[in-house]
Structure formats: C-alpha cells, structure tokens
Length: 348
Image (cartoon, rainbow, N blue to C red; front, top):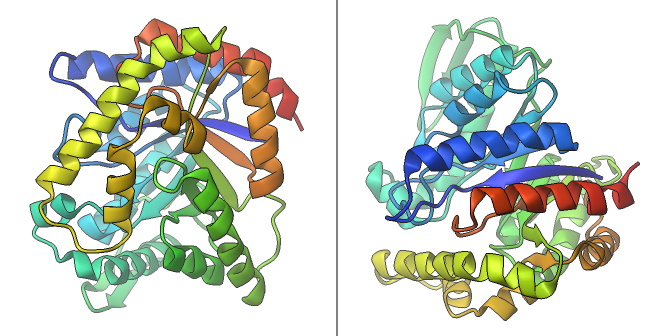
C-alpha cells in the first residue's frame, strides 16, 4: 500500500501563515525521507480557520525543488472555479518543473461561498467540471486546441508546455456523493474517498456503487489502485498522549465547521447540509470512531488492515494535523512513528 500526506492548512488567528507554510514544506520534505510516496494539498478559499490554501500548485512547485521522488498530488483542484486553459498550463508546468511527478486530483466543490465568491452558479458545477476536464485533456494531448462547449470556446491555440507524463498526468476524482461515485466508475477514473466528508460506514455503502458502475462500463480492476482513502490520522505512544495532542486541534476543526455552517446561510436539503450537521455536533470520541484513526501504532495497524479488507484501497492519504493546532514537532514525531511502526506492515 502507498501512503501520502494531506494538507488543508487551517490557520487560526493566533497562528502565522508564514510559519504554517514553512512547517508544511518541512514536513512534506521530511516525508520523502521517511518513505511516504506522495503529498496532497487541497484548494480552498475565503475561510482561514478551514484553510489558507487557495493556490496549492504554488506550494507543490516549492516542494518540487526540495524533493526528488515524492509524487505531487492535488486533492483537489476545484475545476469549476478556474478557466480550464489556465489549469492545463499550470499543471503541465508543474509536471515539467518536477520532471513528471504530478497527480491531477479534481472535484466539483460543494461550499456555496466558493461559487458566490467567484460569481459562479453552483448548480452548474458538475457540467463545468466535466467540460473543463475534457478541455484540459485535449489541451495536453493535441498539438493545437480548438474547443466548443457550453461554457468555453477557443480556436486553434497552442497550449504549452506539454506535460512530461504521457499522455498526461494521472487523473483522480473526489467522490463524495452517490452520483459522483457512479459517474467516476462509468468514466473509469480513480477516486478519492474522504472520511471527514463520508464517515467509514458511509464509505462502505458508496464504494460498491463505484465498483459496480466501473465493471458495468468494462473498466478493468486495478487491484486497489483505483481507490485512495483520505483520513484524519495520528499515532502516538498511548491513547492519552494522542488525545492530549489532538483534542485542541479537533475542537478547532469542529468549531470551524460550525462557523462555515452558520456563514453559509440556510442550506437546502442535501449532502453538504447533512455533512455539516453531522460534523459540527461531534465530540472528540465520535471523530475517533467514525472518521479518523487516532491511536497507538499497533491499533492503527489493526484499523488500517480492516479498512484495507473492507475498502480495497491502494493508497491512504494521512491528514496528520486536522484543525491545524498540533505543534510542528509533534506532527513530525507522529509521522516518524507512523513510518517506522505502521507502514512496514503494509509493505508490498
């Protein structure tokens, strides 16, 4: 199994954005030496308590020069928010800078303020994502690009540079709703499943939809490579030590979700409302049980082995600092424990 790191980069009013980025780059660089395979920051906007990561490709470009083998993933680019030509150019440039290490993770987005902030209609998010993806793939694989769609029209453009990876960097879709699980399966794309969005029990229900749709469309079984699990994760010497390190950060995370819920105004019935309602009322114990792996190395191995049997994932992306309040040194120590005490149990 492969293991990566996830970064959402929450930043409270008492923290320095400069230091948060420096710590993140140091952690991701150190991860390569520990044997982690990849790093996956997310694109988020307009809420520092949730994230100060509006431009994850810039962070990955800096990381490209500090590392040599680490895969540089994006979990995720919010495709509806940007012009697809701009995305195609930036991803290809990052692939050139890193000599072919980019993993292109995409999603449609679900937070209303992202769309209102950019003056976009959220109801168009799926159509925009699919049209953008089609256009980006054509830009990477055609000498010149001509495209006529519902939202974008271009004629005879030379999109440069081309990616190092041929025909293009691997594409992976964030699957959070039942329809996206089915759509991704029909299209044959690998997916992310995020435990902070869909708890483990929900993932058990949704993954068969993806695999059934994938098989019905004739896409081959890739032996787990098609599924990546993203989960809050932290290991420590004892449950008490883990709780002491994590509880303030989890409290901040839950408070940030509650603030997001309040600022979004009345939400219609649907997945986002369901997720926010569930998460904002959770306790630390509930987070541990339903959407995270916070424990000793041995207990972590046991839970991940069980998830491997149930979900059949080929990669786990570890979110070591949900809430962003765990001190840098403690994050590094947890990464070390995970690399030395947990990862060897999943060596190929």
